[in-house]
Length: 336
Image 1 (cartoon, rainbow, N blue to C red):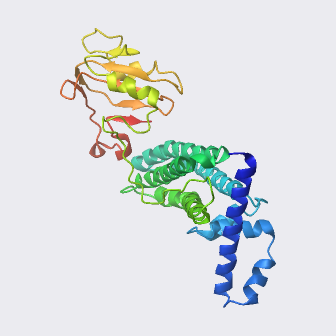
Image 2: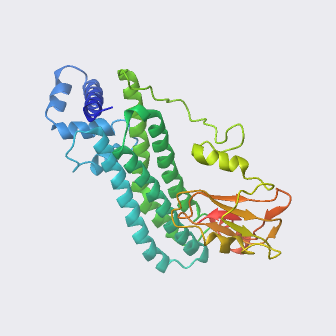
Image 3: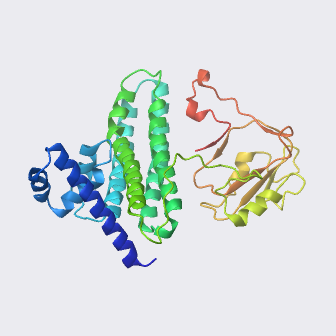
């Protein structure tokens, strides 16, 4: 679909939002000409901001974040909202160092370290959302909307997980972090509300050649019938299906406790994964009990572990909360 069509759809969407806002204001003012007069006195960009913020739970935060946007394009306004959320989280990361210096509880200090990492992930998801809007293709509406909801939901989850780390800690570090995260959580929540409203308005307009957006609760299958994750690209699905213990498909690296592989440690083998790896990187882990905590960093992309079977290849860690390790860090195989 051409740029003209996209602009037309955005314009129609904005008009529909502004009309909805005007009706809402008119009803709140008792109907008649007063409501129209009140909205008529607003600039076009201000009307657009109020319209896009109308469905959000935190309207004041929304309108403040968009106050300098100077745009009537709903897509651009939503992007400004995402950028504001990213800026807030970056400020939280900067402040977390100061809080850590003041925190005396070891678990609180550990929670603050976790928060810095989690905020990095939250920013990544917001960046993905921001970039997705920049390349928005209305013919792929359903996929884009689903991606946006997943990334925004992920960003919210990372922020809440940061706060969960302060449970049962002493001092005021947790309270301070909650205060710092308040605005970013509200902005991220607002982003979800905007996307939901965007979906509903597009569906109601029933524009030719624009597919309906699925607004039912997300109950998507994470695995296909053969057990392959649905998000895996088609070209990699066949490789995964064939990568069994009997046919490890020429792995990139072999790990074995008996010395028959290149490494006897999974973490050592992971050092060979290229940064932001674009293709499938197969790590064949031979039978044995691997007593290590495996850390897969966010830059280790498209990594697949192949074992000799669930009862033969075992990875076991020994980190526990009772030993002074926060729950977030106790995963045997985790992302860091």
